[in-house]
Amino acid sequence: MNEKLLHTPLCDLLDIRYPVLLAGMGGASTPELAAAVSNAGGLGILGAAAVGPEELHEWIARTRKLTDKPFGVDTLLPSTVPSGGTTQKFRAELPQGHIDFAKEFKRRHGLPDIDPNRRRGRAMAFSRDFFNQQIQVVLDEKVPVYVAGLGDPGFMVKEAHARGMKVMAIAGAIKHARRFVDSGVDIIVAQGTDGGGHNSRIGTIVLVPQVVDAVRPTPVVAAGGIADGRGLVAALALGAVGVWCGTPFLATPESGIEDFQKDVLVEASSEDTVVTRSLSGKPVRMLKNKWAEEFDASGLKPLPMPFQGLISMPLYEMARQAGRKDVAPGIAGQSVGFTKKIRPAREIVEEIVAGAIEILGRDFPSTVRFGA
Image (cartoon, rainbow, N blue to C red; front, side, top):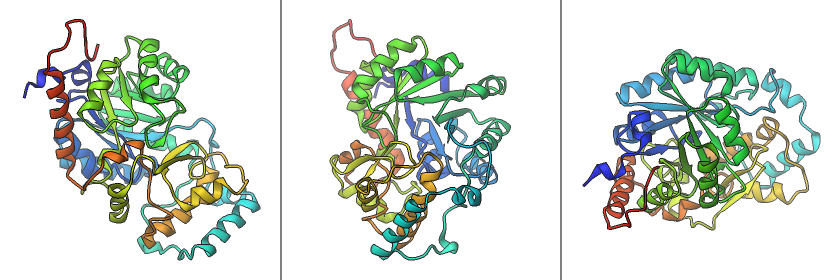
């Protein structure tokens, strides 16, 4: 296998073997999954959006025990969240109509109360203070790569560079990509609407080349709907230097989601996802479920982050603990249709790489340049 065919500038920039990056998926991209992808030659990234500062220190330490390869941390930096406050304070500001709808939803679907002994993590107040505390941990730990899954990380770029770190940001629009470059970000992830989680209104195949043209020579990584070697080669042909993949790695033993959610992924088709604001207040692509369906049909307006999450997340936690596929199947992108079975993360990386190298090894016109 001629690995040189797949060596792009991203490999040198991040000191990785293959231009395959694990998406920093909250709840799924755990130390075990991130380390598995890094050990397989890609770049594993921790999905730390809801991970508190103390736990984040623990996650980073655990990842370093599992791999000696580079890895990253992904958090959110939404500009519209309050500067400070507690979960209790934010809950006191919730509209009564949304509270009543959530209570009725719980009753109608027979969801059990949350068992505090089975709760994952702690209830965190998504405020600017919380996000800044996470950033300080990332800086203190000198994590090789930081990724802003939402928002502009420009305020911390200079300090990150001083500590030998690289900074990435996810853009769903050309104007955002340009702003991130002006902020000094090293790598732009152009994520199209095909992808799971917070995403764009623009399709990946249209978004990526426009972002490449807009921010050149800053390297661009393609994201959204990429699940195999064909997707990686297509991304390179669009001018990207690598890919950011999430959904393919959800149905792995190393993933942090529930077993019943992994089963849903294997059963799902690409038509089984929906973009909704019912989860976080911002557009999120996820598997179809009763909460998204009923909230979106209710006439209630989604609340801004973090308030919408204070309505939805307790219900999702109840449904997760109860194993309810109809309410909490999880987040996934349109590439879920490629997921046919649960398999190790290393196998997925190797299959993506082998498939891409097989295609790149064919005879192409000399004018074709990949990863330029």
